[in-house]
Length: 410
Image 1 (cartoon, rainbow, N blue to C red):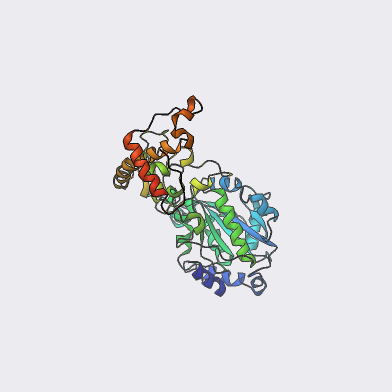
Image 2 (image 1 turned 135 degrees about the horizontal axis):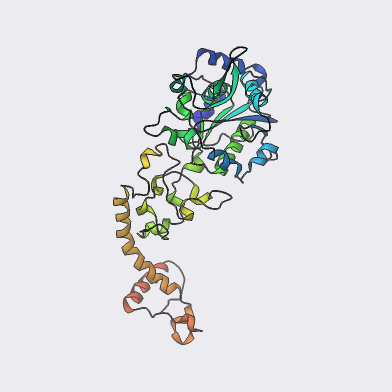
């Protein structure tokens, strides 16, 4: 995937087949020679235009809670090699009203003198549905129709206007990456992901497809780390980050929740929670961790602390394209668990007793094989039975094969 994208980045944009002819003309205007000199750096400033679609704003909250790197470091330009980011956010920006919207107009008209990225939070609603009744789903700013009238500018329209000239388009959160909850079965808005809205042939002005950072909400560090890596690539310093076939940062989303789950060992030994609050594996009370690609268990949520399974919650698959419909009903054992957990119980029922035997012997100092040398009351454990001693002797002899260890516990 990375090789294909890199080749695309070398050749530049390939168009957006869903856009109108007017949008294509805008794209050509934005790719003026004075902007092409930024391709591959050096860059002092990169503008970031944050668009909010069908969203709860949870992605914004997660992003500002990031610590590795924090948003402040990106905005101040203190990370070596990473250009300063000028953020145009509908909530966090100082400007308001027309002064705020003017920033977006400048990007559309190629008046910035610097490259920009588009960050989309929330799914993209089908504004044609709302237009039938003279309304709109989500809008940002307004533009004049004539001297007496103006109209709201739908966020989807801003995305259509800005995407062709953007150095990169980044979808943050599951609503933007896959459609999420607003696109669930029965929704009235026709919501879709950024990827679906822009189409399969979309490439940014730097040749990049849509970059997807899922999560409901996403881990803030996943977002800022990816942004920093992409900016280093645009700067011409770092390599193109590795993405999977769905545009996710591969180094963050290759492994499943289960792979590094703090409760994964219980699964292996066939021990499963029966109630919420139990310490064992949560698969049988509704956790989808074994099939969900997410790094929440290893990274935590904020400052490497927290995370669903780390704090007793189950995984409901919020980073996956089929969320939420594919994972409902929540808090019910996944169908696959009937087979997989049954197998774990069989294996675990055999392995746990053997490990307990080894554990019992490994909790004894070498001198304690002679019970006269046990130093205190703490050392008086139950004496292993004959079967346990025989199994452990076999274990130790196998452990010592090929080595020069002379000691063998009695």
